[in-house]
Amino acid sequence: MNGRTFLNRSRTAVGSNAAYLTKTGIEVDASQAYEVNRRRVFFDDVSLVTLHHERGWAFIGVTGAFGAFFLSVAIFLVSVNFKFWPGAVPFFVVGAPLFIAALIRLAMGRSVVTVFGRRTRAVLRFGVFRTARAREVYGQLCAAIRRGQTVTSTVRESPAPQLPPDVPLPPLEQ
Amino acid sequence: MSAIYTGPQCPICDAPLEADTLRAGINTCPGCDKTFEGRPFQPRELRHEAVQAVTQTPDGVAAACANHSGNAAVTTCLRCGLFICALCDMNTGEGSFCPSCFERFRTGTAHAGVKYRDYAGMAVSAAVFGLICYFPLGPFVIYWATKGIRQRREEGSGIAGMVVTIIVGVIETVVVLGGLAMMIIGAVTS
Image (cartoon, rainbow over the protein chains, first blue to last red):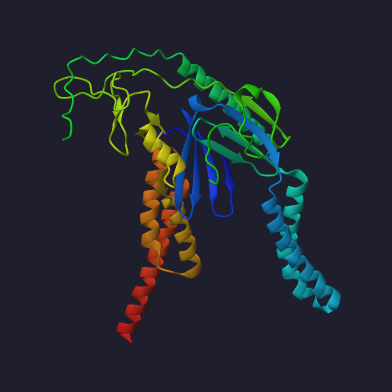
């Protein structure tokens, strides 16, 4: 048993990222077409944890454009002749949620927690309405990293054993 | 990843940040002038001494590190097999690599992460597809869900979803086999 604690899952255009807290670090499972790529950031490697808000202009642009397109088709159909309203309903049903999602993201943004290690980093993106959860995870990570780095700093190292002088060396190549 | 990761960066513009300019609380990026909340840590320096000689030759003499002849090797590089001491050990969590192989992983297309197949996701997708399209995927659902259960147990995750998926797979198999049996019986009797 690995004993992982689920932290967050975020969707991307091509897959999803799930973040877990383990005893020794953070694991991020990036899933794409049933292939999962797991990356780790160890607590004793972490040098910085950040929390910030971002809008995500790609999401706003693509979602807003699709929403606006479908809404404009619906409005166009109704404006040509109000009798066409049943035909406009599907366009409205598809377009309105997309457009509203883009507007909400534009207005509120989303929280991002980033953990920087020596060699790797983990990025945890939270949903628009999960700001409190992002702050909670940020605090949870800071506490776990502080604890992890305190534990590793108390482990004593043993000195390097000296090699005996008569170690046979490999023969030189001719 | 578009740029090579070299250490702490601005989370907004990816500009490299100096460790001594960071403080706990609100920080301002010198590159983009945007603010972010941060908490810097002081990771322990990498060990500069070999901890113990675990790689032994048959006559009991420790093998020397390929890069530091004074240090005993603690392990071998997973990629090239070189003897390496604790100083050279670039442990990525998935194994130990020598500095040059680690550099290849870091700068090249290859990476030192773990890749595996998401059998749980495959089982759920196959089950849903089989239900909607009445397609004989039941045996595949059961096979993938069984592997998914094993994966989830190793991870310590719950398996309730996979059990439900197996039940759906069994129902799909029974329905499809029943349909086939009815067709055969119908053909024989007529």
